[in-house]
Length: 308
Ligand SMILES: Nc1ncnc2c1ncn2[C@@H]1O[C@H](COP(=O)(O)OP(=O)(O)OP(=O)(O)O)[C@@H](O)[C@H]1O
Ligand SMILES: [Mg+2]
Image (tube, rainbow, N blue to C red; front, side, top):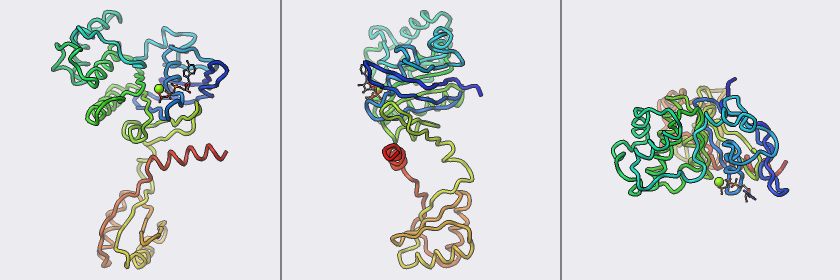
């Protein structure tokens, strides 16, 4: 399998303190991969090692098959990253900034610059000086800059920090587009669960420099999976509804608690079940997927860690 990034048993020790403890995971082309952990978990430290800004104590990181330690030039060629705040020249326009960075990169066409400015929705203000830009606009220009040399891997440390909800939504939308349309692999870090859930295909939960779990959201949203549906037929009718469902669906797992009815069923089969209930004389007040929140899963994952 050709992973774009492989993190192999990576450790980081600073003054005797183990800040990253044996991280192990890989990222495939075309996926948005998240790094989720509380403040001080080791996200930035790991990202700095990925881009060669900080030495790896032991283990290795391969980018497109090249070790960032042993073949730095080949490895870094495939990386675009914003680790600290993107450096921009405030007295230059957005376009001039990109032209400047393109020169440092060697070959970048003018077409590529326009394409990127459009991608991050700055095409209409490309002649304006960066000094007049909002934080979100600077952030987006930083991403355009990181993509100039057509890397296969884009790494962004807390890309939505300081952005308003609309800015966050935009970042999310074009990171997804880049991954889907250009096959770019994207790594983003955040301490916000809800954000990772919306933005990522998969994300690693890290705590105290250790990998606690990798959540694969593609799987949990996949077909054929039994999802909990809460069906409200009114408090007096719950028990009768359980009986009637069991008659038609003897294999279905049904839970009944506090006058609430939950069935575990494939999404595609829900309309038929609801129709059946109505046809057998039940009133439906509400029927919705009872999705276990990411917070629940996060707490489960971290408490598993505590008890082991
Ligand atoms: N140069 C350093 N010297 C000593 N300790 C460090 C150094 N850099 C990071 N640390 C420690 O390593 C741990 C991980 O820090 P890191 O910045 O990687 O966390 P983070 O997950 O990015 O957190 P945040 O969400 O706050 O950005 C912290 O306890 C931090 O104090
Ligand atoms: Mg950080």
